[in-house]
Amino acid sequence: MLEKTGVPTPEDLAKVYPSKERLDRGAVAILECFQLIPCDSCCGACKRGAIKEFKDINDLPEIDFDICNGCGLCISECPGLAIFVVDQTYSEKEALVKIPYEFLPLPEKGEAVDALSRQGERVSEAKVVDIRKFKGKANVIGIAVSKELSLDVRNIRLRRE
Amino acid sequence: MYIVEHPILTFERKRRVKFLFDGREMWGYEGEPILAALHANGVRVLRRSIKLNRPRGFYCAIGNCSSCFMVVDGEPNVRTCVEKLEEGMVVETQKGKRDLSTAKTRPLQPSGEKIREAEIAVIGGGPAGMSAAISAAQMGAKVTLLDRNPRLRGQLVKQTHMFFGSKEQHAAVRGIDIANILANRLDKDKTDIMLDAVVLGYYREDGILSVKQNGKFIKIKPERVIVATGAQEKVLIFPNNDLPGIYGAGAVQALMNEHGVVPGRNVLMVGAGNVGLIVSYQLMQAGINVKAIIEAACRITGYWVHASKVRRLGIPIYTSCTVKEAHGRESLERVTVWKVDENWQPMTGTEMDLEVDVMCLAVGLSPLNELLWQAGCEMKYIPELGGYTTLRNEDMETTVKGIYVAGDVAGVEEATTAMVEGSLAGLCAAKSLGYVGRFGGLRDEAINQLKILRSGPISQGVRRGLEQIIIG
Image 1 (cartoon, chains in turn orange, red):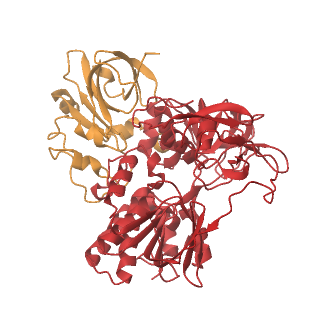
Image 2 (image 1 turned 135 degrees about the vertical axis):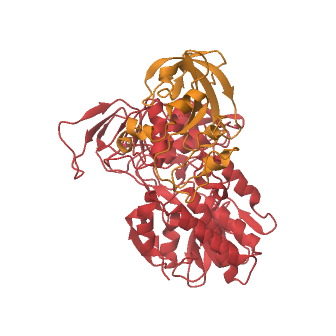
Image 3 (image 1 turned 60 degrees about the horizontal axis):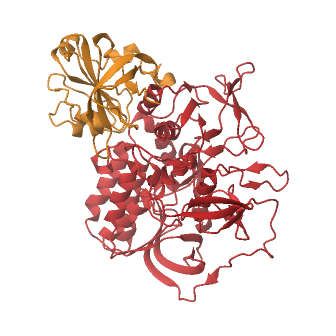
């Protein structure tokens, strides 16, 4: 259970995932936010209005997956670092996963890194394909991983010593 | 060891200076707390306990407790967590009781000036106090803002994470950046900022604040007082809990995020509330390994998003788990933890050992309420708000007319609500002096913001606590 482990269960995640059809159409944001806490910053971050206005700041965020184009601006603005973007159309075998990253050193474009699960365990290798820096916010790293792992990979670990 | 590279922070250091610790030559940076320089040099034992000669290190690192007392240039009982390092200082481990009558002390000198008049004195320049000073000045009042530190901003200076909330409360902006936004909003013409100014007492008979600043004793007679003194970290009871290396989580945050010093190699975090979760994440950002987070409750009490953040880094969280015992000769080497059952009773046979040199206690905060007691405010023990809290009305005025409160001293919550409470207290104190401004609209807005921020399920305890102290 999330409240004991800090790791969302498959049931928790099923509530926030887009449909398979939507995932197959291209980049889309996934808001892994499961608790009623007073925060609505994601709504203001979305320039397309895909993240709906909050009636009550304590509500869970709601996103219209048809309006979202997976730009990833909301990733850097979420204080909970709970937003990720998945693009299943990145290449034939790989998906692009965008994650918030607040560590040093930043990886280089093209660098091979370990892809980690929500438990921080290595699940595969990933290649860094994109690095976007945001002043005062979280940086966003784009990584390519095999398509079937795109919903499991949520962090990276650099291999450099 | 100092932190060299940090993903969020840059550390501005002055020149390197030499000092003496128990006769050994050491180097530190001028102006950093003596404690930071010592810790960077690997010194963790700062004094010996009076009766049993036990080693003691720091605990709060922000000037609240007496754990870091040392002898500095012959003067005993110096709080090395706030006293700044100077070239050539002679620092000694404090052993036993020191005789103050023969010690080289610096007695407080009367300032020689008349009693200073002030309209509104705000005590504490953290998020609540700065917000109070801003809004009172906006209404037209003159403010004297006092802080015992050499700088304003309170504990925001170590909050490297982005805040929650809404735009009005600077959501998605880091605490360190919010600190600067607030400091820049202070009205320089209407606000007299007194730094290094310790408020020693409030004398209700004649309404005088006694203040120590730069070795001088100053008296201030304000028409209104806003107490925004914040809170201090609680401790946990277990064998050897006084070993150096067992620190408040906020203390470790100050050491690494404010002073840029590495607190240790391997850390055990006790408490999975927001402070425990956030500081664990920040330790990892500073390159320090967090071995585990333990929590005595059966669930994570902080925000789940913070918990998910640390889990993705590979840090395990053990709920229903507490400290049995700490081990170490001169400082912490190992901790034994054990599980607790649903009645919070420890279970023999569930012990687990963790080799750590630092244990952070993130087990809650309690209001720094001494001035409120002294002023005669009616106090009530409210566990949900961290301890003894003053009764007050919706406008933040206590049972003593003219004394207002804001922030953690009015009940421990988040910095977000502290800022709104500060604004509200500033507005209402100014209004009571006859300043009208846009009072009506701003007051209602602040009260409404507080209501919304506290309306969710996560604030249930806070609401229960506030119901008992807000008087009509």
